[in-house]
Image (cartoon, rainbow, N blue to C red; front, side, top):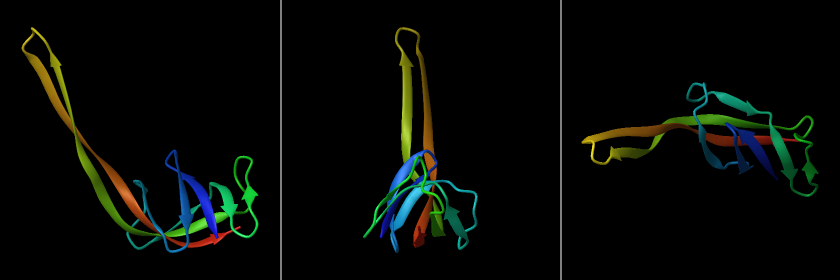
Length: 102
């Protein structure tokens, strides 16, 4: 059985036992998170939501909070002797899928 869930404005295809990396969630490491925005549940019988499947949820365990790769932003204005460098590292939460209920 698999499902397509939405979290943080992104959609993920998940199965039991899979690990996914989502945008940072306000949860402790080791706690359980329930994802209620299920768009599709597939398997022997497929259920498609309008926009979400009624009564479906995905339970996941928070494994870790990590940082993504560093992105360097460099801006330069010619003939002005001006430049600016900034950086960004996106924060992520690693989830391990425990169960899918439809």
